[in-house]
Image 1 (cartoon, rainbow, N blue to C red):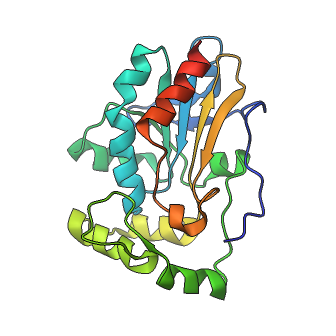
Image 2: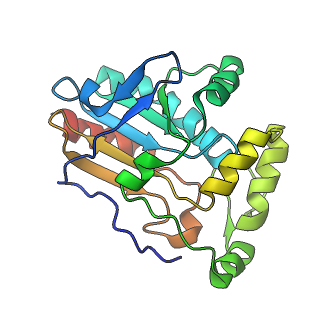
Length: 216
């Protein structure tokens, strides 16, 4: 998988953003946190992505631990606000979330969107993953998404299909930003393991350790 972009790295100024909130009618911006608290910024895809749906649950699972350390969390979900509101009406979450269907924040943070070359498509059929440990055995990447959609009982909508066409195969990323707006820690999907890292988050302990360093 070619990584032609260099994502925003520790030590760099975090790019500003201002996005529609999912929980209500307001706008959430980086300025809301500047000078007040460090921020774990998670850049996800649309709700069509089964990896993202599960990662949002994982992130919500330790949002309270981060809050206890004085670190806020924000997940950017790449779908229209109304679509996200409908989904989370039935699957409530404690995570603060903002909407960015056009992936402007992914672009600003320079998260790679690989070119779907023949080599990449071949790798999707040969590299086996089990990112959440709930499959009986690792499966080819090209099958894992379908299996997870079926397990989740998720029915794709026209909005989802439009999001897929704009977004696939965009990667995801996490950034720990300090009170002054400087990135102190970053994780970009597949950056260390190649495609074998698809769908994986860092461990909870790694994220909490990054938060401790940022909040100190």
